[in-house]
Image (cartoon, rainbow, N blue to C red; front, side):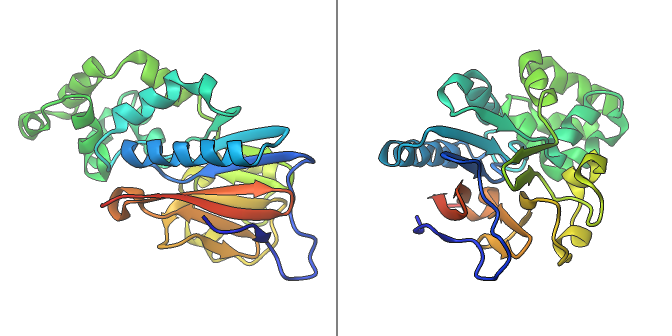
Length: 254
């Protein structure tokens, strides 16, 4: 856990949270229930050690796929929201794909499976080896049969962005030069280079996931906190309070 430090060392006014408030943002979990449980314990310990009048937690999307326990992650969070500090859940591209292929876009289901969906289906007890001899509609039907509607409704409720003081939380990023109210959901869930390579000062300082880095990717206009939990065994959260920030992590074997 790093100590608090100033976000900027320039003359630009640093972004800040509202007075007497703190927010924790959690990067891409991708089915790593073990890491999520560890990280939530670390955040709870941090909250006890540093009481604050207003606390929130935001999940930056991609809770599911790739890792082994998508089902456990969704059910833990959906059924224990009352134990989290005013939680916000954001839609990632993996959540978008799941809703699409179990909805009106069954033809894309094999793309999603190769994108991490096999692990999602396995976490709900589906025998994925059978998919090799099935068409897309049959695969979609098999998965729908085991995923509770409650879990899908939980995912469908996710927001595309969340503003907190001078910070904007999104899954992937935003389109540079576009007003926040005009941003498209597709960009907030999928964008990469156009956002990552931009040096413009956005209308708000962006905290995001989606693009993996070995350590948090700190730039003058954004911070990315996807440390590739499903492959690296490292899940990262950022704690923002006033104009300072620090990181809280959970680490296990990949």
